[in-house]
Each structure stands twice: as structure tokens, then as C-alpha cells.
Image 1 (cartoon, rainbow, N blue to C red):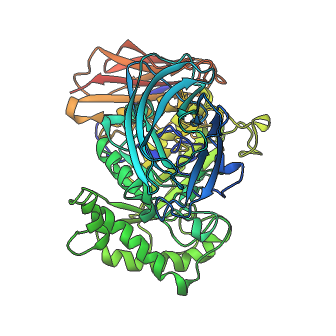
Image 2 (image 1 turned 180 degrees about the horizontal axis):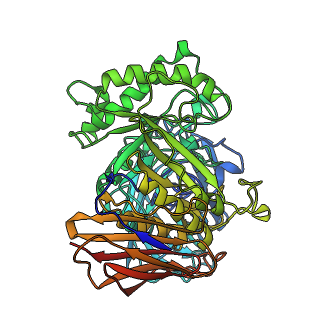
Length: 628
Ligand SMILES: [NH3+][C@H]1C[C@H](O)[C@@H](O)[C@@H]1CO
């Protein structure tokens, strides 16, 4: 194939083009990106006395433990506590242990921050009781410990201590243990609430993020961050929706909620943490607001939308409002951030093309956007229905389009936006991923063709589709693979861009494709010979003006080498350039047992006004060279 590159750019590429869609799914937040190591740390939303109420916790050396609804709870938001009773006659170290989110990683010379609230509901003895906090293997090997003194007060007290591990654990089957001397505390009962154990966090932020996951997300070079969902914004019922105000302030004041992916969300990773994360990575937020539809199928009647619109206005004011005129902004100031964050995009709901949602989105969109656009004229509101169906007023300026399909579908639909009208509407390809090789059952099980991890074939299909998003980035302003993160085994959705477990992060083939495009976005699109719409070879040409570089992405989805000749109209094309190539067996994935099966390889290639390139079978190549 000969590709003739034109001399002039067709359009500027939006700096927002490649970014991340995030929601707490498959323990991507609690147990994943959010660094809290203790599972069920505050017994939020559990029913006392049930087995589920003790998930993550186990008794040590004969202690009796139970979650109870405290007569005097530690806070209004956290009604439950764990009651630990030391049996009479015990002499060992008696207490309670937490198993973490499917394990706890312990690294030598690392300082962990432990804290918890406690009270002795019926104090019998006076004086204080010494407690030992330790990290140990399930076999009892102690990697680090410290001791704290518990006053026997009947009212709630908080204790915090650093715990340094002096050696690393060989695996992640480890426990965080709180124990007391059985003889000293025989017969006594202590209530424990809002327990927490943090490892070092990304940029050392308090209540922060797990370093290896945060660094992997940073490595991708995202330009935006969509949060808090996705389904997890919506709630199965109206009262289980995500509510911004329940996710800010002291952790003892955050009630948590039953998330939409089967597990309880602590909401320890909340609105302020999301916004600080966006600033840390220089990403623009694309913030979701709840739009009156719960996933169980309930739409708030039009006459009752008022309070939810107000809650959304407060959410936006928490982000950009003036503390002098908005209570929500004044709360932001009290939490240490008087100046506003940057916010340009607000998405109204999520996937309102599902079930009965479109039918009510007509009034939900109208009433929400009419009210909020008047208050926030500089915000772009993004509609989450199928473009133009149903017809909406006010006419949306932005739509969020989602697609989950097969690798072949992505390769053969890279012209999806070429035929869209250029009428000023902009599109957010808010969620896309090749997730199954079975076109007749996209969302089925692995036995039915569902991918557990991205493969080289799925990543190449996505890359082909992304050359189309680049070509059409005059109307596509942002795009994100979804889901972003998922636990390798405890998940509700596969494949994920990043998989992880308590020990490490696994970067997929699709992750490297996202990284390739984000780091090589360029700032203007250079038209060239169009690829065959349903062929197996795709390309896109961009210019990075700051370095006078031409960047050509070449995607070969075929199992045979694809020779390409590029003809450039530029005078001084460098004679050599670099090629970053991701290639491998079509069905090969990076997995926990083969985490680096397919990784990018960089080499030098011959370039020039006319040059040949042989795209390897099933490959994604990024060719970069100077052409001033
Ligand atoms: N069903 C997908 C669509 C929804 O928005 C996400 O929560 C899900 C996983 O990315």
C-alpha cells in the first residue's frame, strides 16, 4: 500500500482527546486505587450480627467478636462497631485481624499508618491497656509491630500509630492484627470503629492512592478523568445513588453506600480526592451528576426533580463555587481548598439509553440542564443518550457514545465518525473496548468468547478504531477505554485496561495502546490516503509542532506482514526515526502468570521523503521522525 501524506493539516487535535474513565468496579477503588488496606474498615451499610458484617475480620486466639449497632456510635454516619471480648482465663495475645482486600502486601522498610476509634462500653478497671498492632503472615510470622496505649474510657477515643515493617512478606497472605495481653484484659470488652491502615500513598497524600496503580495511570499520560461512573454513579435505587456530599469531609462522617457492582463502597475516595487526583496528573475532570434514573428502573417524576437538581448544583458549586456565596463552596474552603478547581464538563447521568431511561431523559435532561446551564453558563453538559434519540431540548452540544464489541468490529468501524454531520456537536467516546470474540454474545462468559484480559488482537482492533477517532477529532473531543481498572480475580467485568491484585499491577496490551496514542497525540491532524474501511491495515498521521515531528500510527490486524510506502510532501525529512512497536500472537495477553508477554519495543527505522515500513503481523506501530 502507498500512503500519500498531504502537505497541510486538516484540523487541530483537541488536547483532551485521550483520557480515562473511572468508576469503582471490580474493586478498582476500594481495594484498588484507594490505598486503604483494611476491608470493611468501618462496618458501613452492614447488618450487625450477620456473617457479612464481619467480612475481612477474624478473631485471634479465642477472642469473641461481633459487629453491633453501637448504643453510642462513633458518629451519625457510622452506627456500627466491632465488639471484641477477651475470654476469661486467656493468657495469649488475643484480638482481631483483618485480611485486607484479598491479601495485604508487606514491604520491608515501609511505614504503615494505623488508626482506629475505640471505647470500653462498660469500663470495669481503671488505667490504660496496652495493645499491639502488627503485620503478620497468616502463619504468624511478624513483619512489624508497634504498641499503643488504650485508655479505658467509656467514651470514644482515637489512637494512631506508625508501624514499620522490618522485612517483606513472601506473598500477600498477611493480616493486620490488633491484640491485647489475654491475662491483662481477661473478661474485658472493647468497641472498635473506623479502623484504618494505609501504606505510603501517591505523592504522600493523606487518605491517598496506591502508588503502583496511580503511577501506572500516570504513565498512560491521560488528559481527562471521568468519574464517578458509569453504573456506579446511578444506584440500583434512588437512595443508593452516588451522592457527592456523602463522600467529602472526615472519614467518620462518610456513611458509604451499597455500590452498583455488588460490594459496599467506603466513599473514602470521594469528590475532593478525585479533584486533587485530577490536578496531580494535570487532567481535566469530566464529572458525572446523578440524573434522576436508578439502575433498578426508577425515574424520579418530573415534579420531584427539584431536590436532585439542587444536589447537583451543590456538587458543581463544591467544585467551582465561591465560598462567599455558596455553602457547598464554603465547605470546600473549610476542607482546605478555598480556591475553585477547573471544571468544564459535566455529564448528565450515565448510559441513559438503557431500559426506560430514554423515555424520561427528555424531561430529566431538560429540567436539569435548563436549571444548571443558567447557574453555570461556562459548563458544557454532556448527554448520555444515543445521539439525537430521543430528541432533546435544549439541544445537546456534547454526547457520550459507548461501544463494547469484538476486535473485528473495532477494526472495521474506524470510519464510524467519518459520516457524522459536522453541525457543531461534539462527541465523547466515553467507553469503548473490545471485550469478546463472539459477535453474537458480546457480554457473555469467557466460555462464550468473553475476553478475560485484553489480547494483542483486541488491542490492535481498538488501535484501528482510535485512528478513526484521531481522524475525526474535529468532532470527537475525548475518548476512553473502559473499564480502567479491575482486580485480577475478584471482578465483575473483564477485560480491564489494568488488572491488579494485592501484590502488583498488570499492564495489558490495550494499556500500551492507550499509552501510545496519549503520548503521541500530536496537535494537528495531517490527512493522507484513506485506509480501506474494512481492510486490515490502518494508519493516521499527526504533527507535533513543538518538535516538528511527524508521527504515523500504523495498525496491522492481519496475521501477515503489511508493507507500506509513505510518500511525504515535506522538504527536509530526517533519514532516520524511531518505531515503537507492540506486537505478538493475536490471542496472547499479559496476565499475572505472564505479565510481560507483550511489551513495547523501540527501534530505529529508515525514514525519508519516501520510505517503506513493514508492519508486523497483528501489530501497533508508532513511527516518529523529524520533518521541519
Ligand atoms: N456496562 C458498562 C457501561 C457502564 O457505564 C459501566 O459502568 C460498565 C462497565 O464499564
